[in-house]
Image (cartoon, rainbow, N blue to C red; front, side, top):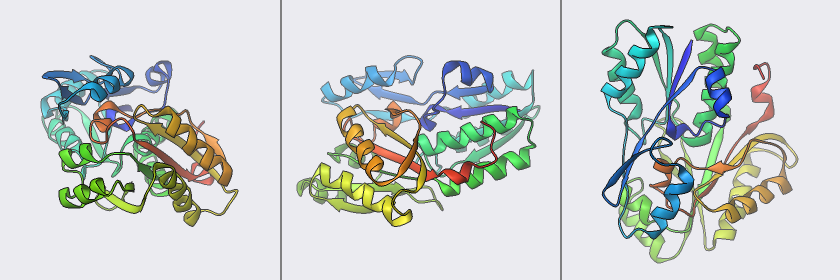
Amino acid sequence: MQIVTDSGTDVCLTNDEIKKYNIHIIPLVVTLNGKSFKERIDIQPEQFYPLLAASDEMPVTSQPSAGDFAKIYTDLAKTDPDILSIHISSGLSGTSASAAAGAVMVPQANVTVVDTKTLSAPAGWQVDVAARTAKAGWSKERILEAMKRVGQATDVIYTLKELKYLIHGGRISHMKGLIASLLNIKPMIGVEKVKGTYVQHGMARTFNGAIHGIGDYVSKKFKAGSALRVQVLHSYNPEGAQLLTDEMNRRFSCKWLPTGLLSLVLGAHVGESMIGVAFAPENAFAGLPE
């Protein structure tokens, strides 16, 4: 079993682990200042965010084409035709649709396209589950069950200082975003699990207030001291990421995955101030291969 995903899932594995688990990451594309970049091939997130901060232009993003997926499926099918193709939410990106169209073009490959209904770290956790269970020899049906269990148990919430990128990308209502921007309100945004689209969980007057609000949101789901698996990602805001880490540590018993930079294509829709946290009860991972 081979695993295909896109760069928007923010898979939290080393390059050696990615090779070990037969994970193949197809890049999303961002265009800024008239130049197009394939994520993590032409440009790394740590290079992109300073460019974004200095630019007067708004970035434009695009998903891989059906042909891009067909090519990678064709190449992989030469060694193993069984492929799980796992992608960020169809409610926020056309990537999984491109993957499905590409699969039709390669009948010699047995491709199962999975729409995670989320993005970034929560989607990456599903990729990680698929890779580890496939390596352990689990059947496809059992792998998909484990992915679904972890996906249902995982939640994400983020905040940011400015809304112009979300407004430009059409990810939130323009009028609501404009009003919030004028009022200098900091929203707390999640991803709902039915359509995989953004949902607002609250607002705060200050960025620090939003961080506290994120802690309150998680506390409504889990009592103080609960054992949680947690990962903080940010779009070039390490100070905010540390504040959010401290907030979670004050409230819960956290098993931490590495803090890192958000996929630059996702960051293009939120700007360089975003901080967010993915979390799930640690018992959701019971019985999975380490």
